[in-house]
Length: 128
Image (cartoon, rainbow, N blue to C red; front, side):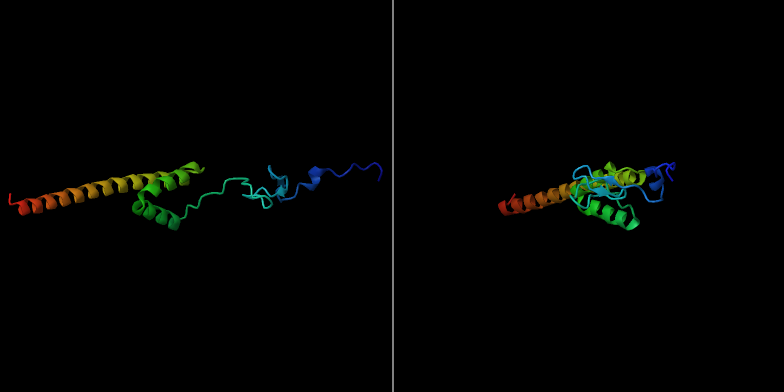
């Protein structure tokens, strides 16, 4: 028994569970799969974006109906790693730009027609 080597930590840590690490802010032990420290709330790693079909549909409808916000949402998707997130972000920004252009054209036509109608009524009132 005296000649036996001490149990190394490598043997103890060779289980299938990932080894815990420490929070950089409060130094509490955390799991590698954690996104936030459960003690202090510091963000440990970036939470992945949801790229399900339903989320994409809601995002695209939001980009069409609320154009300025679509740019912000698209940029957020562009910041995340992963090809799918980047494609979703580009589509969101393109839909937002298309929606903005269409909205501007419709508003310009509306105000042109309104101005024309007001000028015609004004001319009739004055007898021109």
